[in-house]
Length: 419
Image 1: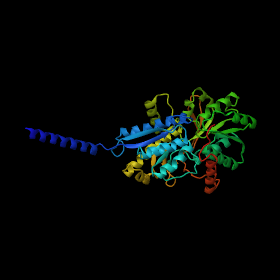
Image 2: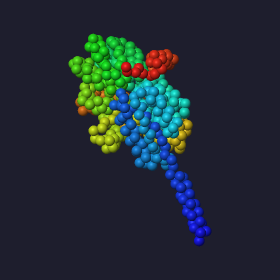
Image 3: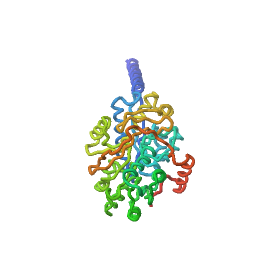
Image 4: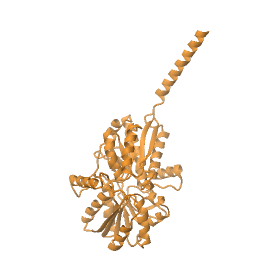
């Protein structure tokens, strides 16, 4: 009898082992992807909504069975609007969390500081924000608009439609500094005038010096590349001084979208009437966009809105998924081989990754912000535009020297810290 019990126990143990083995064979481990954005700090007003769009894309993929029969698990991390935290967390995501890709960043500072990290570990970063170019890596897919898809056309449109004398204002960080150079070179090519150029440290609310300069110089047009919550006091104090879009219109280069309008409370209405150049607006008339907007609102609430970085973050996940499916593997070294020429029928239009630069061919739109927080589209490129990594006005070497000098002047950072 005792022997029979032993045989039964051994048999049950064997069955349990086989069941567990079959479980691990049939139930594949999940694919972990890093979602690294600022959930707190000065640019959180822009990045929180981007996280939601990226998570929606992941949920859509999981609802269809995930990738390679494996569920996708996002590892969400707060970059806290600090480039040094972005670097630290990117490394932790790769080394400790074992993510196979990262979607993240909004400021160019966050992207640039993550570049050596993803290159060191041969991982992949999908960067969804507008950028200034002069940056290229086999480990970064630039899903946001490049300088020739936003800064240059937005500046030229402003010249031909708004005025000839320009005031440039931006954040004291790499994107705005390079953008200002590109804006100046673009305006010089059409014999326009830049009356002044001013900067605000990231996260600073002190904008009085900029407002004073605008009043003194009386420009026809203001070109705005401010990042994050500094836009709130800037627009509010302009209106307090009686500077309206009818008197001095503002063209924002992606920094004022539907998300910023809704995210800064009652002061968002101070932005109404001004202009933005972007690769996407919620009001884009496409069936794919209608589905995207409907699904987003159904998931997060009817009062939620989408901006261009939200859409790019959503698209970034689908570009990664397309490359994984073609590679039939999730490992970064295999996925990297299939990132070129990846096409996505995106809400903004049919876009695809450039064969050489891993930037995306994108649409260009100019919109005027309405009081309801949506944009009336008043111009578009009709078709996707090829990205250019290096602005045409200077040599590649000259641009690289310029940005390296900025990096050094900020104490080996990509932005000037607010005091």
